[in-house]
Amino acid sequence: MKVLGKKIIKITALFLVLLFSILMLKTISQYTSLEKNIGFLAFKQQVVNNPYWMAFFYIHIFSITLCLLAGLTQFSSRFLDENRDLHKIIGKIYVYNILIINVPACFVLGLFSNGGMIGITGFLIQDVLWAYFTIAAVLFIKKGNISKHRTYMILSYAVTTTAITFRIVKNLFYNEARHDYELFYGLNVWAALFINLLTAYLILRKDLLLPGKFNSGKENIQAKKRNQKK
Image (cartoon, rainbow, N blue to C red; front, side, top):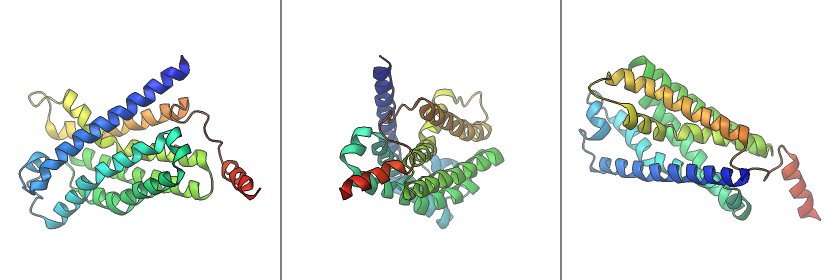
């Protein structure tokens, strides 16, 4: 029953991320018109005429869904066992997308975030953690430490999916008549980060995603290399 419960939780979580990724893709599609007064841009009229800000905005929104979908494939034990080469390719796409495209873009966007200083600091801290977790995951896999690589990839993906959590919290709790938009927005940035990092911590503590599939540290890779030489 315990194993079944873990599988149900894992499948449910993956389904929800996939569902909200698709919904985000639908939301993002409205920006293909390049109009400056639709969706989120309606609240950013003070910067929509800045070509640099707009460039970073479009870069971010049209690439973040790829991060979400790429990350989904990385936490299935069966997928890892059967598609190791593909796992590496998708992992590289995920890492390059974050470090080369989205971290720089989100840093610029974060400087002009809604929510005042609460929102700005929240977004910038998210950006720093995003880069740190992703770089740490890369460094650990290069050292052959699969356990640490997995840990930091989960933390990295937790930050990646704050965009989803942010929108869920906003849709569930924001009331225009009762809440100050700027204050709610700023606090929601921190709430999304806290919720996702707490979820990542619980996943790592309970080992819900890859129970018993990998040994920790260098031993796993070194053992495989020895077996290949035989």
